[in-house]
Image (cartoon, rainbow, N blue to C red; front, side, top):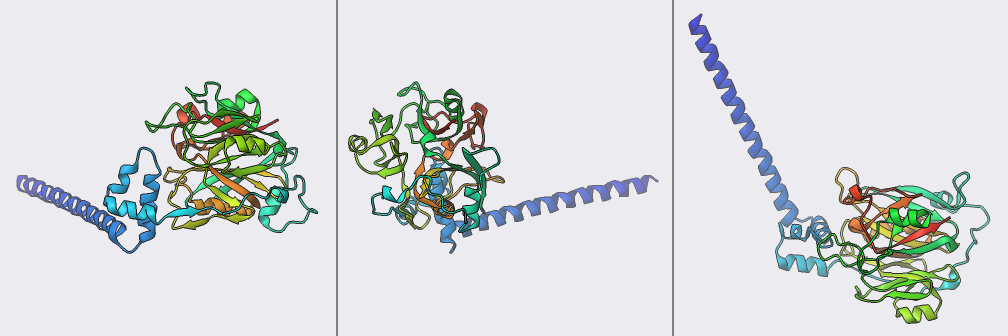
Length: 352
């Protein structure tokens, strides 16, 4: 009996040792596969993935170092120089926009039907879920552009406010974030805008600029996209505007995207107007593996054109991408959910 026990004990020890060897070997195999995958990803023929990795990392605030995990500074600069956006070189033709001109009740596509078929009992807006291979988001159709207003943080120049609180403060129906703001530490208080702000025909802010254009509405409730100065824009009838970009669609023509446009996959916010005056708020969540990685400029342009956008512009994205509905956070920002959305300088709101 004692001999049997000794044999059993030795057998168990050998079995444990074998399991350890198998686990160790399996671990090394997995690590080798990851390493080979990384080398293929970094130096293999799949330039699309390389470009996507670099441009996505370089358009974040705190994770640019990821671009240099596999690539040299020279490669990063080369990729950034070969991925960019060329805007349509035209002025917005406001005569194309005929507010209330939604046609004779026939639909040219399923997307047109989706936009023009209102939810029962709601003549103000309709929220349409949007989904693609890398993203999840929401498109809001706003039927009366005269109800769109620009909200600005009450502590402009020092502290921002999240879109939810702006929405509650204004008793709004739907709100999305607007222009950019100074963000030196990767988070920022949201109170100092980057570029011009116009509200009710008056210049609220002009300090700092990305060199972007003005995105806003005139007193005829038509979306204007212009590189004119704030003073000239106001002279031409601009009511409310933020400074940001790029301009994605002008007079029904999408911008030319070279490579992936230079911004990779990101959370996105965009605003657009159709020829019938209906305004589109688009938000795309991102940077959340398993839920939504984000969208490219091409994705955003494609979505908006399908739903009839005639003019459209990119708004501040990334961590700022936020949508509130009736005073509640509606989307899933990848950070800031604990405070129900990042603090921003301004927001576009649909008022009651």
